[in-house]
Image (cartoon, rainbow, N blue to C red):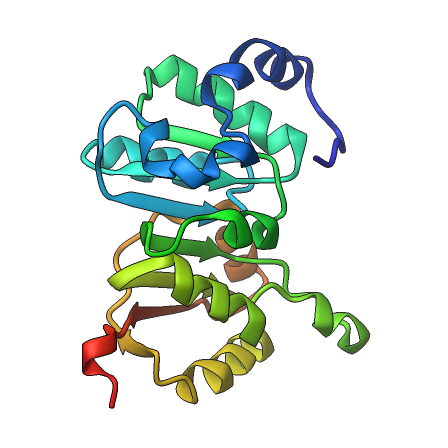
Length: 210
């Protein structure tokens, strides 16, 4: 996990509350059993400070949520807010998304959401972008049939790259993006005049593929 600048309150939350919410990689094989209730499971990759994830999970107690974030400040902030709210349908992992996806069971997530992944603006860094053919292979494996993948970005060249990838993949079909909270990165992007692009796909069931 990346430390960065962590406030005293966030550091205290990491010490006191992480043990309650953290899911360890060795427990991924039994992922549905890591929650108090067997409910549809949503994965959010890179939840940042966690405010939008908290808003979604509080609005949907009928769903379970697994949040991934590698920055300690964001994890500590979400832990504090989740504890205050008495959240019971959240687990957190402080690991790289690709490692988690590779270690997860097949057909386990009803939804996977990625809101404002790092666009890696410089051309020489494009290979670091999260959304790639390899990434979508893993997304297809971990989604249930008809499961939803939802990504949002405010960087048009990144959106264009995603569209080129998605349009040539018959395993997914476009659908309407569900509503979501406005994130800190989205507000900042709009202030800079960036257009926000939401893309939603559903996993095509094997029986529908010719």
